[in-house]
Length: 380
Image (cartoon, rainbow, N blue to C red; front, side, top):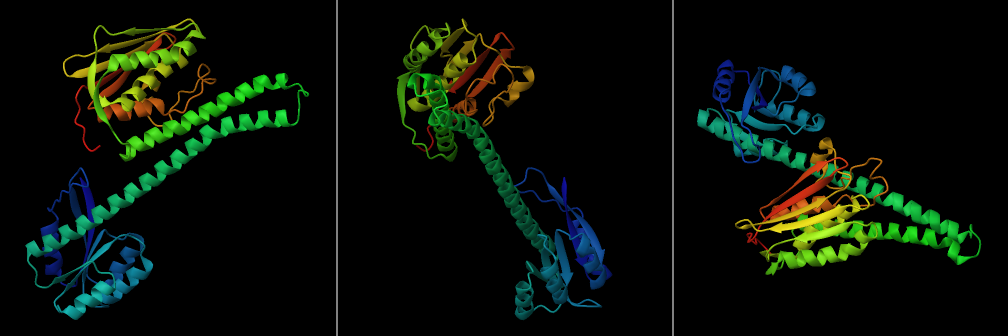
């Protein structure tokens, strides 16, 4: 259980003891945090010792008496407002309650106001409200920082993924511009072909990014219809058959009957395309890819197996993250954005499903996607 530090500054021992008794067993629960929050109490009878403590260890909540032996609560408010950069909240306590006093305290930064004598329920209510505000503020700050870090990581990875192909294309263009191989255009055919491959890779990265951001933001327009997944998968397999044939890789479809689903055709196409593309790309020459479709009960099972380079057990958990590409000597020359499997994972979640992988290094991998055959459409 997390603890919020509460500092009670009051010259009346009975008041400090009463506050401590009420708060020491108080526990609050809020939907913003997944664990209960309790309180640790510190007591101070004068302003000087309280300010010394606040200077190097500010509390989360400060219960501050208006009248103190050596100063006033207003003076302390002025000092902590100008010197303290924490998110500490202050609840003023006074026996001289008036609208003027409350307004003056609020202008100096007090969060709330308690008039003496107050009941345990009034104290509990004020502390609950202040603690809730503090927790929400901190959670918002944490999420903002997390978002900033994710954005920074996203930009860093994107820059890294674009830097290499851009440098390669620039290098080839400079060689061509300088006529490094003479004036015969045919001498530059390989450079041009390699540049086009790099450009195609950058284009795919951009398309993958657009797909991912549309799905995550909920801005992608979803159009649900009933169609046969077997028919769609056959179309996708045909588009990769020529690429596979260039490396003598066989692709086979396995589906005994139509596999109907109510879904967004484009989303299911992305799932199957990414899996088949990877199965070809990470396969060995002379290997094979098997695409198997089944419809157990109210679910759709899409299984894509290959005889490729496989994945080490320690790398399996990383596969479905954004921009994740397993780097090793066998994959160093294989181009990709590192977003394909991340997009597959996000889409399967939309269909109350999941994606899993079984793999052995140098033997191959099998990706299995389970989807609801008639998912809740949600907002389209």
